[in-house]
Image (cartoon, protein in one colour):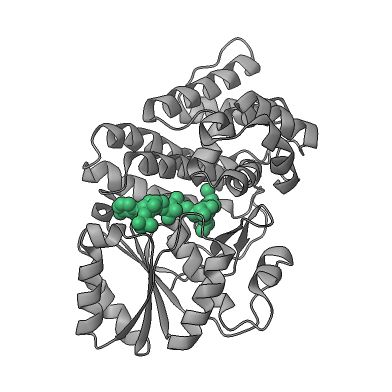
Length: 387
Ligand code: NZQ
Ligand code: ZN
């Protein structure tokens, strides 16, 4: 049964290979000063930077820049960005990049005018913004996080060994997002595959929780089937527009809040993955792929019927002799797909060694909404099985 919920998503999407033209429709809605936020330079290499600058100039904007946003953006970068944003008095933050850039832009939007320390306020105390929020617009270049249509903003604090996501309300969602699948063509294969698995993980996290019959699960089964199919094509043929556009659209719907409505969700793989990310700075999607099978095998007995449903409805596996066998066949099919697309299958490949387990366990938040509430020993066992 679906529980009660409120649904609204204020982000306006422009999708397709002509979508950048719509920036001309959005820019007049905001004041003169635009802070252009981007990462380590991929947008300069592929020409997108020049295109965006030309449109900003044609619209008479005064352009300020904040670049060098690193994958897994840090709190030190956030502090630096706050000063820059205040100094230029931006009316719009235009984020051009992947999840790290878009997350950072959202964190910046709520932090620059905060009187309290933003790390403490948003990431330790999980308070909501009570100060001026600068609007964010997004031009997405890397697919996976869903940051283009949600309120998530993950920030890493290397000093305290924590990587924490705050999911802000819809007043912090990007006001608009421009999604051109062609901008993702230049994403390196490793990052593309990491993004595909991140998307898969977002769906699994919301699917493997609860035992009711609800529309959201059926939507997710469809999204997973599309993703599995398109990913196989994209790894062989990265310039396949059909596959890349389907992956982009699936990633957005996987985490724009819709499929979580009216049902419980888990998110424990992300909790462990973020802890691994805090300790190693590894690529987000790969921190998830490296531990997912061990995690799902551990919780499978506690949510067996859903695992059977997954095997039958996502991988089209026929009933085997027992429910356990059918469920395990589903996980085996997931594993085969992961190997086929080439995700990282163990944490040692990410630089994790046993002496890091204690720090990872310490940094892992334990959720109570999955099929099993993990103990510290469970997390140790998952890490050990994932080495
Ligand atoms: O910095 P540049 O030079 O742009 O290079 C980036 C970066 O090195 C590169 N890249 C992006 N687009 C490219 C490209 N290279 C060539 N051509 C392009 N078109 O890819 C690298 C990775 O980019 P990044 O933005 O870090 O990847 P992703 O989109 O996976 O974002 C990861 C961050 O998002 C957070 C993660 O924790 C991590 O910090 N997440 C955000 C979520 C949310 N907002 O809801 C949820 C997720 O679960 C996730 O936690
Ligand atoms: Zn993720």
